[in-house]
Amino acid sequence: MGIFSGIKNTYKKSEAAVVVQNLLEHQARAGLFDQDPAATATQMIECAWKEFPDIFNGKFGQRPHKISVAAFAFANLIVRFNDNEITNVRAAVIFSLGNILSELEVNSRLYPLNSLDHYLIENSTDVYLKSTEGL
Image (tube, rainbow, N blue to C red):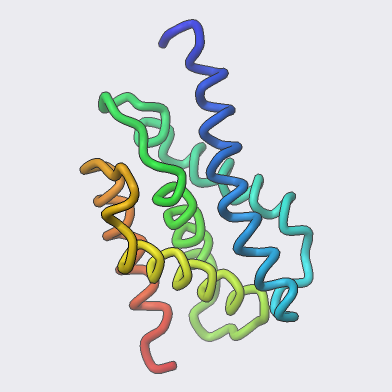
């Protein structure tokens, strides 16, 4: 591990947390999210990062883009929810992931995505589709 990897990790976490925070703030303005978007975003990114450090730390030679990290963090939280439980927080998280996936559907060519990003996005899409079945 390089001397600057800790600084780079902090920077990359911060970038992804800002994406998550902005989406949660949007949901808060819509009345679906009543928690602190900044704190929640930081916790979500930290949780995903700790669970899969090799993916996010660049061990495979590349680091994922902040938008795919954010999508994965939302998906990672969704799988922790009880499928039968319908809450505003769950809805806000699912809607936020849907917003990211819609953005990528329309504008993916504008993002410098690599194979690791596509892997994270595919997994996040699978979680999204399962969480919205029957809605």
